[in-house]
Image (cartoon, rainbow, N blue to C red; front, side):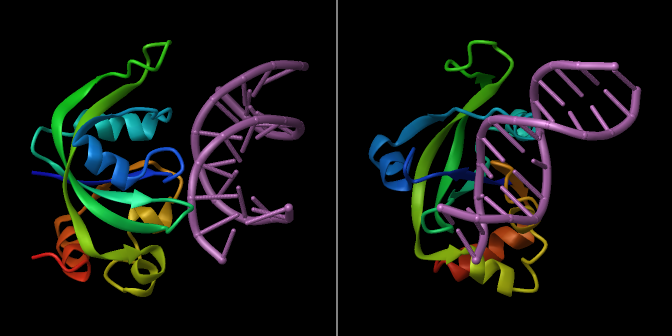
Length: 136
DNA sequence: GCCAACGTTGGC
DNA sequence: GCCAACGTTGGC
């Protein structure tokens, strides 16, 4: 079981849209590092859902329900996407500022390489953020 | 194959 | 809206 963090601009695709749809394809990745992470995702892995620009906070938890396959929106066929299912929202969103202020989390990829849209999260980071978000 | 120029992302 | 950081492109 691995943990991830995926980012979306709420303007484009927000958590509430994700929840409404239930399962949706995580498309639009056009970066090779992010692609490598998508390829590493396994069915049943969990991912934090992060809102960039608006909010700058982790708002929910999603589950990988389909492993990487070619992105239907990518004409070149070079990039992939996965299917994610909305699992549960955080009771309290965990903001970027909060993460930066926490010693345990200050070296997360989210802080170090904020532009990467799909990132690995360690088990420790996962637990800490769930707790901060008000989940068991 | 190097590197400068450019475009995009995302925090502030 | 600005700008720093990063990735990509293209000239040499």
